Length: 303
Image 1: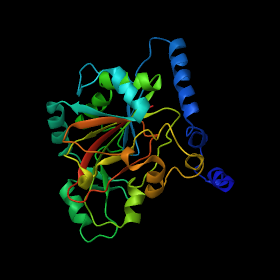
Image 2: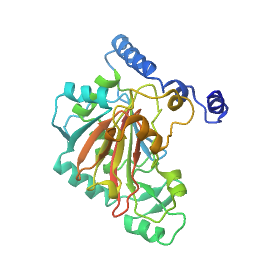
Image 3: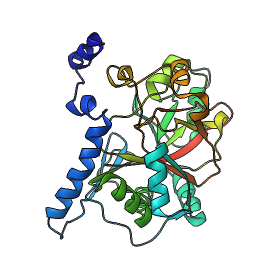
Image 4: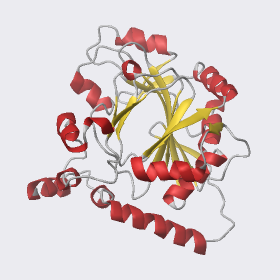
């Protein structure tokens, strides 16, 4: 155990957050600290501009959008209770016109492969590149890194991320949302070996340690099941981890996790285009590699 801890500190990518944000009590304290800072701060907070970095859309000090883009079928209290208990609530839906607009704009976007910064005009070009390729593009991004090029798609994605209801839920869960990170990606069907895909996509069970407080909202823009890139989560695992889970790698073997949490707590999240869910990704989770068709997904991370 001590050797695992030593290896973390020795790692050149070591960050204090990566060690201490694993512990639930410190994540809970983070919420109350945010609430306190919000209470004593000035009321006239100015929203930061849209920024982009590493194919991610970033918004600091977000303020709710003037329009609603998402339909939610439960009260905030019910959603927050499910998040606290299971780390997950399903049943968000992008409005039909929003889905249509997102897909239309996505069809006009260049696609970027993060590893080699290779750019494609459309998904068909990606599929051609991947054919008989030992090093295929398993993930391609629709948001580029050009700060001077804020597209209609970027603006719409930012508006969705600042949807009044989503922001309200995130604020209640975290204490206060200070920034939002958003990714929009295709996960492709391709003949990649497991190790290659692992380097690009989180297809192994793991939990996230981005910060002392964060929560994700995911939306599928294509019909999605276990054979087309569905997300899987271990319910309640954000509240309960062994010491060996907390010290060492954030990844764990599926067999060991099933023995500890029980198979009934493993939940594969399937849904049609526009379907969404909110998750505290301090839970153990993973993505399934698409086998029969690709997955287009919008990922919004609130801090």
